Image 1 (spheres, one colour):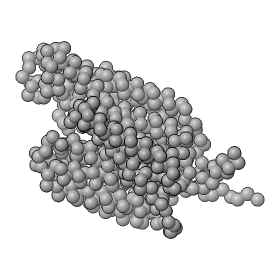
Image 2 (tube, rainbow, N blue to C red):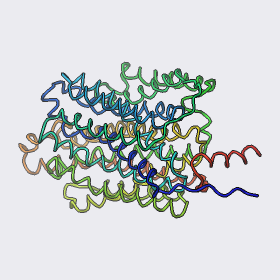
Image 3 (cartoon, one colour):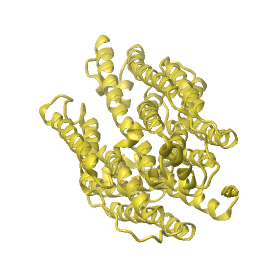
Image 4 (tube, helix red, strand yellow):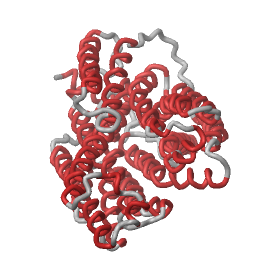
Amino acid sequence: MSQPAPSVPQTSDPNVRLVIGAVVATLLLASLGQTIITTALPIIVADLGGIEHISWAITAYLLAATVAAPVFGKLGDMYGRKLMLQSGIGIFLAGSVLAAMSLDLNMLVFCRFIQGIGGGGLIVTAMAAIGDVLPPRERGKAQGFLGAAFGLSTVVGPLLGGLIVESLSWRWLFFVNIPVGIAAFAVIAMAFESRTRSEKRKIDYAGAALLTTALSALVIYTSIGGTILPWFSPQALILPVVGAVALIGFLIVERRAAEPILPLYLFRNNAFLVSNAVGFIVGTAMFGTITYMPSYLLIVQDFAPTQAGLALLPMMIGLIGSSTLSGIFIARTGRYKLLPILSTTILAVGAILLGTLGVDTPFPLVMFYMLLVGVGIGPVMSVGVTAIQNAVPHTVLGVATASAQMFRQIGGSLGVAVLGAIFANRLAFETAAIGHPEGTAGFNAAALAAMPASEQLAMLQAYTSALHPIYWVAAAAAAVASIIGWFLVEIPLSDRKPGSEIEAEAEPQAAE
């Protein structure tokens, strides 16, 4: 006699809703930590000095979040999501308090790194926690909410940061995290069950150290290449060499580790490989697209900084809307393969249209193009995480989920670096062609205002022409991601409780 099917946890369950609310709030806290200081950087530098290191206040957080992702993912699998969420909040708040007390920019950069470790851990653990409380078919909707939180932080972070700096002090950008973090800590304590099993586990210290070294070398190289140091200078090239050696060592260690930090067999999993490839490419296109749009609005359209920030709202609306709707679609149909294919196609169209921007492009058209970009980005991350979680054993759910964040961040770092190099080279060519070999030096308010109207127009046209290749490359990358999406093998989404689907999929594998 067959056993009755296990009950499916519904999102109407008060405890499940509390868990989802807690992880969404936690993820929003962590993602806001990355974007909230962008508008305040000039004020921070005026107070602390060290303008030559200003970009590291952002890079340090990104670097730490990238390297923390796989480590927190693995530890969450070993010791439970509750412990890692609370640990992540503790590290994030410690970094926030220290950052608020910074005496110089070097101290701020170090504290931002600590913040990033906690923030990166919170993001991946929050995503993995959804897989612990919902069956696969319902996870897409929840992951859509998490994707919406990311989109919200992209625009709200800089605006909130500007408001806090104008009303209080830049130090409150970090103090404001304390009450929010404490509240999230308390909610997690109530909503999550503690792991009661006590078993000795082996932590893969060597694998974690080697993977951290490889990722750090890559992110730092893409951050300093072409800015602080020339791309192919001996000092800069040391980093990719160190990264390559660490990666080789990591592959060797992982083959022998009892509990590898990132099991290599995952790279033979179709959903893991295809979803992360798409996420990596979309990260490249997304960060490159977002990075240069505000500068176009500020320099070419003559927007104020606040207006330029608000101009990103259409992209945020498109991202949140498509991410949420894709989650609802997955929950109702159980299908997901076509979503990243269609969305990356829309992203490619949006990027192509952005590649037509000119000096006199009407602002409503710019907003429409950004809306398309947001619609194209929205479903990719939530669908990718849902597909990965549906295809891997529950024992590696955390580290597999972390891979989605890790590859997206790496793609973003490479995207900003590569597209930045393309932009700089093209701008130098365009400005030299009109008799201004100074390149970017000519694009400040004072220099442009001093030029005759015809010369000023020529400079602005040179600037927009230099932007076009960025969006062409982003469009090509999105088209490649759409093609790769066709290779995803769609596994039916189960209605089983979390964990029970693993036993179900293990039986046919054993039979094979």
